[in-house]
Amino acid sequence: MLGKSWRSTVSACVSAAGMFIIFASAAPYNVQFPVTISALAAFMALGGLASLGLNTKDSEVTGGSIVQPGIPVAPAVQVAIAEIPPAISPKPAPAAPLLRKW
Image (cartoon, rainbow, N blue to C red):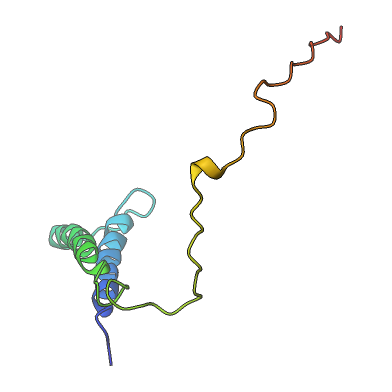
């Protein structure tokens, strides 16, 4: 059975179809489409991207409330700044003088 992720796939396909028509009518290919098809392609590209943005982060599909399977990661160890040892030499070593090669 299909989950809720099919909406983002359909949105991306609609946007891709619209962008294909727009790019096919551009300079290197110059395919002539009727004006209504070109206008519909622009709406498909914009509407598909807007729909993709609305449907991409669904809390029930992409991990908002459901634990996703994968490799468990151990939590990072918290280190306080006071526990870090001070530097060995507070003054940097003097730089060696530059010698000219010519």
